[in-house]
Structures are given as structure tokens and as C-alpha cells.
Length: 435
Image (cartoon, rainbow, N blue to C red; front, top):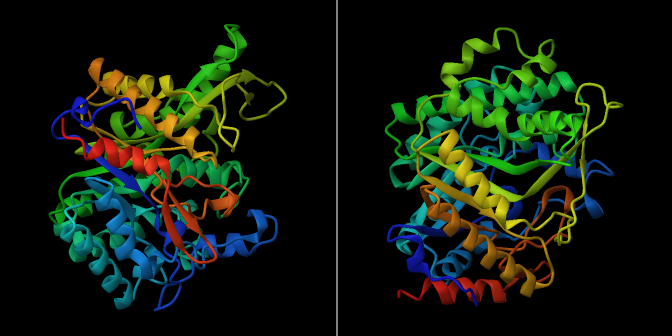
């Protein structure tokens, strides 16, 4: 069980759990269009064991059972994502009524169980038809995304407790267009620079459309790392500046300050879209809350042999999860305080935090330490209003396929049987304790 009590976090603090459409839904029937993850997973060598999301956790059919698990665990909210290709199969144009009906049932099911719907418009499953037109490298995606946002606003907006535009723009752009680890799998500096800008432009454009259609409580979810230098040398501190800018400050500065860090615009100058600076007012449109996903830290050292970004990450000495990510709760405290002091006074939600691990006793200890880290941040003045455990279910973990298990509920992928783990019971014990 956890060593913290629910009451320590404040009377209106939201505890929830999180998932993403492609990782759990399956249900690639009833008119759903193809996404970039369908084709990325079908390409040999991209995903462990050539796994794909065709079935995933069969949430498309088993959603009532999954919502019951959230309610019975004592959680207040459920962070989920809409699948763009399920609602608009070609990305633009004709709407798939079966997809609308599914999310009608899902959102109504949350409300019937007393759960607050925290929706994300985009969690990485871009319709393939839009990738054919350049995807996030094409400036037109801001308009395509705005039209999609308008559909969500009109069909579901009045029932959503909170809405995020984009999940983890660093992953959408850098991980997927510079490092090639996620779909669409590019390793190209120009592609990455365009995606880094267009993903934020699309966010800002969608915020305007959502507000115009009366949707309340709007935000964006940024994945952040605690960035540190490998040493106190001038070279490693310079590497830290670049690494922190690429992972954290590009997105924080863009969204909350309407500017990009100069250390990166100098590097990317000839690769960025023309007249990018004219979009900054749109990118920095006012929000209602800030979402932060946190998993680990990055330690940076200088590496002059690397051309555009003369940096490399080095492994730290701390205990790690089964993906090799360091377990560093202090980093969560530091980031929450940093964002609240340097960027925004908006309410902050920890929209993802969790551990890939088969040993659930380690996962339970991970959550306990990170919940304490949230309390430490609150004690230092950070206005943290909620915490969402990643993830409700063991699921399709992108390029790791089904080899990585983040869930607080075990899923037998052969039978789709759900079995709550000790970490689920720890949350249940804490959340049902109203002391």
C-alpha cells in the first residue's frame, strides 16, 4: 500500500488513470481508416515481434469492463484519446458515424460512472491519407487538425471535463521525424524542424476552434525530462543547454512564451518553415491548464562528432525500469516547480507517470515515491491539481510491441482477461480512504 493519503493532495485533486486509443482499442472495423501506426508496424524491423494494434486490448468491445475498473479503483478521472482515423477515416472529409457512436457510448459511460472525461485529440495515430500529403511536415496540417477539432467539439465538447490538443509534441516531431523511432519513422533534420513547428501551430489553431465552439478547460500535454549535465565542464553544460532546449524548452517556450530557444533556432535556421515566427502568437494562445508527462531524466555530455546537435545522452547510476529508464522521483518535483515558477501559473496536471516492469512490487514503490514527489512540489508552491497513472492496462507499447507492461491491470493478450495488480489495489486502498 502507499504511504500517502488522498487527503494530503487537497480537496479537489483529481486522481485518474490514462490510456491512448491505438494502444488499447483494437476494433479496426466499422469504417475506421488506416493510421501511420498501422503501416509503421507492418514494416519489418520497426516494432518488436512485428506486433501491431489490430486487436490491442479489445477496448472497442470491452470498454464497459474497463470503465468499471477505473470506477472501482476509486479514480475520479479517465484520460483517453480520440482516434482521428476512427472519426474521419481519410483525415478530412467524410465522418464515420460508427466512430462517433463508439465515443458517444464511451463518454456517456464515463459520466454514468461518475468519471471525469479528460480527452486528448491526438495521441499519435495520424490518418495515413494525411501522411501521404506530408503529415506533420505539411503546414496544411494545422487546418486539417482544426477541422477535426471542430468535429470533436460539436459532437462531444459539452460532455468533456478537460480537453488536450496534442499528446507529447516532442514524440510527434523529434522522436518520429529526427530519431525515426516512432511512426512515420523519418530521420531527417528538415522533416523534424517542420514537424516541431507545425505540431505546435496545429495545437494553437485547434485551441482557437475549440474555444469558438464553446469547449471549456483546454490544455496541451508535454512530455518533459529532468535535464542535467554529465559534469560541470563548460562543454557538458553547453550540451545540457542544447539537450534541455530540444526536449523541454522548445515546447515550453513556444506554448507559454510565444518564442523558441535561440540555441535551437540558430541550429535549425535553414530547416525551419519560412516565416515561422509569424505563427508564434497562435501557438501561444491562452490555455486553462498545463499537462506534464514525466518518466525519467536525461543526462547530457558533449559529443563534437555529432554534426547538428553535438551532444549525447549518458546513462545514470540510479535504479532503472525494464526499458532502462532511470527511476528519479526528484525529477518530477523539480519539473513541476520549474514549470510553475518559470512558465505558467495555470493549474498543472501530471497527465502521465508510470513504470514499465513485470515486478509489480517495484511499480507500487515507483508510484509511492512519485506521489510523494507531487506533494513536495505542492509544498514548494506548484499548483498541481491532478495525477494520472500510466497506464490503466498493459497495452501496445508502440515500438516495444507487447513486450513492455505499464499497466496497473494485467492483460492476458490471448484471452483479454483483466486482472488488477498490486499497484491497482494500492491506488484503490488510498483512493477509498477519505481520511
